[in-house]
Image (cartoon, rainbow, N blue to C red):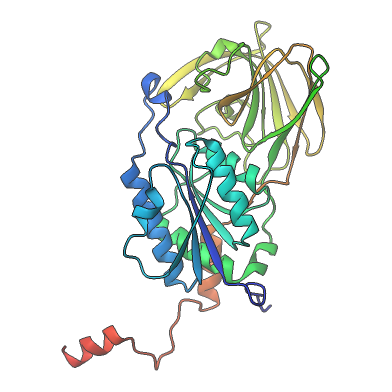
Length: 355
């Protein structure tokens, strides 16, 4: 099969988005969570951009941020780099805006640095984004550890061969939350990439979920036993992987049928009382109670009244996660890394001539 490249007249484009605040939040004060420094993020981005240009991508779009990480990452690199202007709020809105702008500019693949919350913000800006998610956050269930160089090469290959995305790459799962509050006439639609949960508290506060006794229910689309955070509750009772269809609903409270120890934060374990465990098939909505704050991907976000009508389901309309290993294997099989045997670079000639 011959793979199509970028659309005619459109430059092959890779986007890079960084959340400067990922891996630095308040959970470092109450847990053993690691710190992802600016220098680490700059290094990952620099390697990613170098890898993309090495593979021959035409241009790289970079998100701007209040810490100027992108500008520092590409200093003195050869290649066409364009910076995507954003609102510069220093909040998640910058990530949302960057993803939306890269969608408008027809990026063939995007590399995002952050945790689960960052990936959710990226998906809010571009729901079906072709994505390589590199973990640099606190909760890293959705993104994975990928070398920046390798990520850049894989992103360039996808940007140059867009039909590869159609060969077995499904949209990743989302937890879709519909909120109808009759008292205020507010109707909201929210989503999460890992889990949504109801926390019995009146305030969003610092966003992190710290009190295990305040968790009322959790709907998880991804629940791995090795995870940390809210999804680890389901992961240690009813594991669900990225590729598995459907998800799981846990109800928590005093009428426990199971009691489980889980790492709600890195290095911090808690005991939780689980009342029920219910598998959720894809596209099957379920009504759940309100009265508290809804948390998405580990971060408290939306206060909901007790009378609010909440419907939750799981679908596959999320980002198209790029399998980096599979992409590189396909490129190797297609000899995409080979050079013409008669080709010699200037550097090789200089070495051969002894200059």
